[in-house]
Length: 96
Image 1: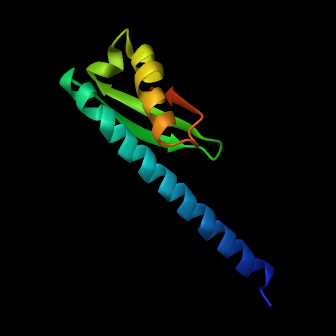
Image 2: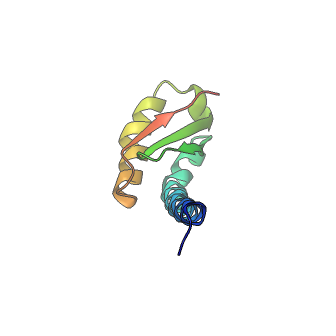
């Protein structure tokens, strides 16, 4: 018989593995667009991935202060991430 604490550990471990896989898939998809960002002197790094599929990115370098960064984020990065990782619902910029 599995006790409640054992079940909790199992479920938490399973969720952790799923979250880890999703983050790896997001990183791989981000690596697809990274060369274009770097060619313009910028980059992006994952800050957080929420359970409901929201990816929070920090745009760095030239991308951080670029007036076109929101368009790059939504029309470029978000589009690719959603295409490659269907569980991604949205991508948001974090300015910390």
